[in-house]
Image 1 (cartoon, rainbow, N blue to C red):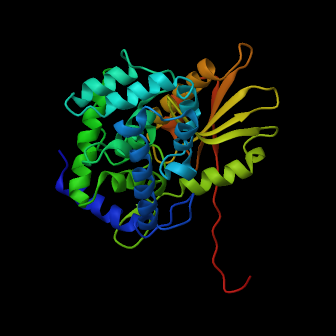
Image 2 (image 1 turned 45 degrees about the vertical axis):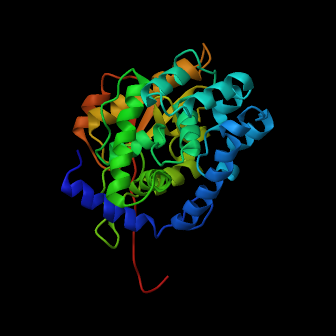
Image 3 (image 1 turned 90 degrees about the horizontal axis):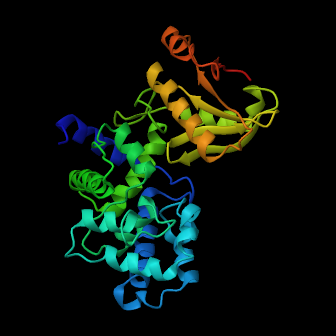
Length: 336
């Protein structure tokens, strides 16, 4: 399922990432891994069948925040909604731990079946599943993991059956675990850092060389620069959120213009022209349906660093998407 070349790339990337600091905590990835293991044990005890009946809303709420779970930053976004139904939540957590039941069935029942709890999505369900797992069988499924697997060329075909989709992703995560000779907690660290390291959604492994033959894109620097200097893109823009994770994917920059309309900004970052236009269109559709008021318009801006006729052709039919170009000036001198 994974080629020898892909195995080699995974191992080089894994070795490189172990030398990098985790951006939120500022500590090395191996140190972060140890903190994650300690947090996992804490919540494994809290969610265990012996303690689950007395799990309080306040105790569960602590799990939703990175400073406590040491693993995931976005669980609180909908997890607080799930905490409003503690009885249903306790039943769902208990069911996730019923090993005799096939994992596809467990995921389907908790996400879409009789045990579904409003606010319980794939990210929260599989985070709980991994925390409760004492056999190292279950990885985490969220948009970040999907994006990283896609970057690595390892994303399996997903279906509308979420139990089946999780089983396919979990199989790949377990293969990666075996190839890297580690555990699924470290694999989840690797998924997060690899996505950051490779430059985010859809980027190719190109540009700046580092020891060991792995490369990293400068896209992250560009997004950070634009976020701090958003008026350079267009006068009157106000940044709403940087790297906004949505059900449709991660939006590089979500802004409001001077007329109060939404603007989706996406950097091209090495993607094919048709793909980036489709991606921006998809994000605009999500914003239109999920964020915008009835009278708010949504438009898109694609930012790239070189002329691209194919991109211009792809954008031409879309009056609400435009292309802007940037230039980077880099000089070295013996004198300041």
